[in-house]
Image (cartoon, rainbow over all chains, first blue to last red; front, top):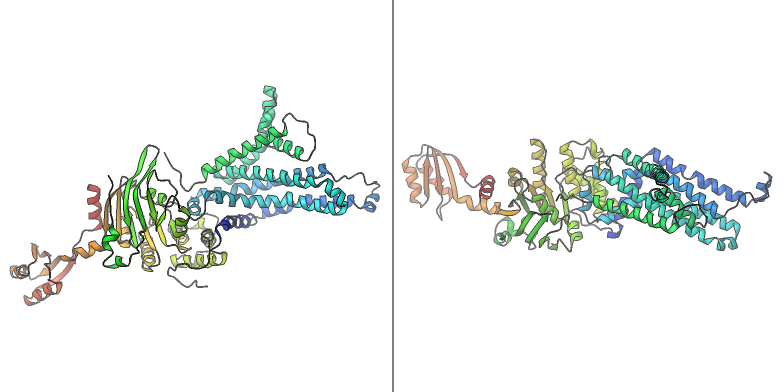
Length: 285
Length: 324
C-alpha cells in the first residue's frame, strides 16, 4: 500500500456496479449498530424469546417430556395463535431496538451537513434512503420473520408434511406482518431522525408516537364518544392488521381494511417528511 | 442579454493553456436559475477550458448556486449546461462520478474517524472497499492529516475539517475538483498550506480545478482563468496567464544615477517613457528586449535597482468588473 505517496494520484482501478452503492450505507449502518454495547445486548436479548419458542415446540412434540409434568400433550398447541404471539413479542422488541438505533440513522448526516457529500456522488436520494432503511430493516428482519420462519420449519419437520401443508399460510402471514411492521417502524424512525437533530429527543418522540398516541386515541374515544380515535393509535392499527392476517378474531371497531389504509397513510406521511428533508441543500424561496 | 465568452478558443494556440483539453470543463448556454420570484443566475453563457478556473464574485453573486446547479442539486429554470461534456439535466450521475466536491459549509460525520469517513465516501463513488481504504489513507497523507487520520472528525479543528473535506473530494480520483471557498475560516498559515496543496494538485496535471471564492488572493495564486460573477451575471472573464504574458511589455524601473541622457537613449529605441522621481515607466517597442535596457544602463553607468513587469492585479480586474 502506497501510503507514503504524498502527491495526488488519479484512480484507474475497477469500480463496483452502481446498484451496489446502497449496500455501502447498509454495511456502515450495521457496523455502527454493533459498536454500541447496549444495542448489541438488546439485539442478543431479542433472541431469547425465539429460543424459548424453540423449546416449546420441542416440548410439544416430545410426549415423554410432557408426561413428566402430567400433561397429555394438549396443553401446548402450535397453531396460528402461537405464531401471532411470537410476532407480537418480537414486534415489541423490534420497536425497542428501533427506538435506540433509528434516531441515529440520518440525524448525524444532517447535523453537520454531510448530506451534500453523499448526494454529490453518483448516488441518489432514493438510494440514500434505501441504504439507510435497509440497515434497520435487515436487523429487524433478523429478529422477526427470519427466526419465525426457522421456528415454522422446525415445527414442520416435527409435525410432518400434512401439518405443513395445512398451515403454510402462517409462514406467509408471518413474513407479511413482519414486513409491514418493519416498514412502519423504519419510515417513522427515519422521518423523526431527519427532523429531530438530537438522538435522545428523536428516540423519546418515537416512544411518544406509540404510547402517547395510544393514550390520546383513548382520550378522543372517551370524550367524543366515537371510535375514530383508534386511527391515531399505530399499535392498535397494527394489531388489527396482524390478527386479520393470522386469522384470529379481534374485538374491535376498525375493520382490517381501514387499518391497512390508515397504516399506508402513516407511511406516506413519513415518506413525504423524509423526502422533504433529505436534500443536499435547502432552497430558500 | 447574455455575455458570450470563448476563452478556450483564444488560448488554444499558446502557452500553458495550449495543453488544455478540447472538451470544455464547463459550458453554459443561457443558464438561468430562479428560486421563487428571485433570479439567482441570469442567462449565463460561457465556455471554460482551463486547468484551474476561478469563480470570483462578491457574497451573493451566485457562485455557489452555479456550482450546486452544475452538480444537479438545483434545477435550471432555462438554458443548459455541460460539465466535461455531460449535460447537467440528463447525465447528472455521470457528472457526479467525474467530480470531487468540497462544499463551503461544514460537511462531516462527527462520530466517524477520518479514514472511515473518506473510505465510505470513496466507496460511494464506486471504489471497492479495499481500494477505497487504500485511497483514503493516501488522500489523508496527501492533505497532511496522516497523523490524525484515526481520530474522530468531531474532534478536529476547523482547519483540519477543511483538509478532511479536501481528502474526501480527491479520494476517488475525480477528473474535476470543485472547491467552494476552501480557505473559509482558516488562519493565515493554514490558508497558505491549503493554497499550496491546491497548487500541488493542479500541478499534478491529473485533474482540473474549479475554485470558487470571494478572496482574490486565493484565486490569483491558484488559477489560470477567472470568471467574475456579479448579481447572477457574468461580469468579466480573464485569462490570467494571457494577461501576465501581454503585460510583459510594460516595465517599471527603479534606478540610481539615471539622468535625461538615459531616458533619451531609451526613447531613441522607440519606447515610450514616463519619469517619476527615480522611477521610469516604459512600454517596450517591438524588437526591443530587456537586455537592451541593461546594455544602455551599463554604457551610462546607471544602476538598475529594481525591474518589474507591471500588470493589472486581479484586484484591479475585479474592481473594474464590479464597477462596470
